Amino acid sequence: MSKRNIVHVEIPAQNVDAAAGFYQALFGWKVQPVPEMNYTMYEDGSGSGGGFPLVSAENPAGQVLVYIDSIDIVKDLEKVVQLGGKVIREKTEIPGMGWYGVFQDPTGNVLALYTSLNP
Image (cartoon, rainbow, N blue to C red; front, side):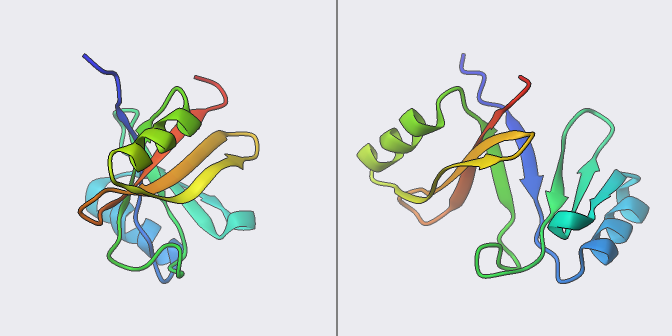
């Protein structure tokens, strides 16, 4: 069985502080602003979590981005292409946290891969 867990979910927001407040009040999520990135992290209490990025061309409203654990992002992105998908963002560093890559499956769904700096 593959251990390709969902490790992070991003919900784009026009106002990250307002979105954090909404989901904190609705679900009781613990939130932590990251002002230098105009981003707010959230944790649901079970160890799962994600963040609220500012709505942009890269993070459009309505496109929730699911991050899946990857041991080798480069290899996984190569396989995406072999299987008929498209790489949207090559492996990119998130300073002090890890790396990610974004792809589109053959149907058009957009997902991401993530490797933690501290697994």
